[in-house]
Length: 253
Image 1 (cartoon, rainbow, N blue to C red):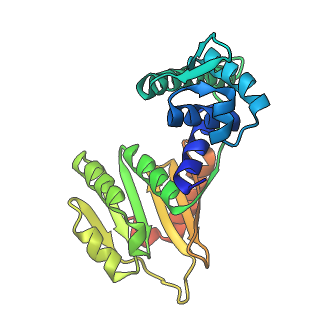
Image 2: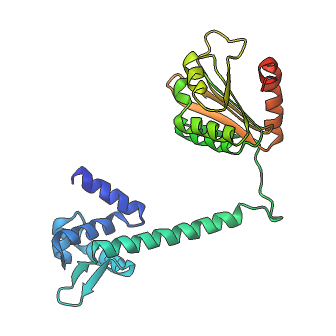
Image 3: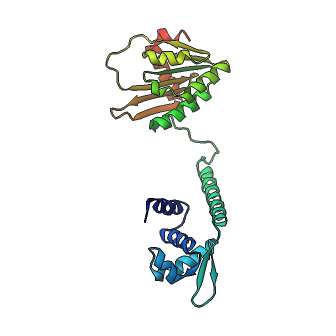
């Protein structure tokens, strides 16, 4: 079995077929049509199992059965199978998320609001930063010491909110980051006071209005982990503590 076929089998399994079902379906497309014996000769499925697998595939609408002796099987076209599996996937997705929507609310109809969340991985942190920035109405503070953590999407979000009238402050001890921030329209750039030597763990800081905050750290292997909160008492208190620590800088925004 080559790598491409293995990937195809794994993909069919993710679409809801069993390993045997995927093998029989692919095998029938390889030979066009055939008996259980024909199928067993080209795929790694015991002949005794082909009958039951074929019956299930017929129920799924993925193959047709010719009532001959011996019974012969023929797969539906690739286009038809693609549409059947797409429709099934969409139906299952709708069913699953309808249930999640139903159970995620408390009996009184109010959603439970957790105070603090953890996000791991720079890509996911990027997405969360952009989401937080996009929600800003009055003020944004964004800071990082690492140029790679100021992505193009984050830069675009900062410019978009600045253009919408939001006060946007970019802070960094790193000259390359400040240079990149200076290129963004509407962003005021500052170098924070009190830089601690040997700070090689800090990642990003994001403050949105008075109740949204994200802080991240970068591990020795380069992986990033962030905590964030929005619309919570925790976020408001943490922002106050940060502003007390950096009062001189933050009063300027």
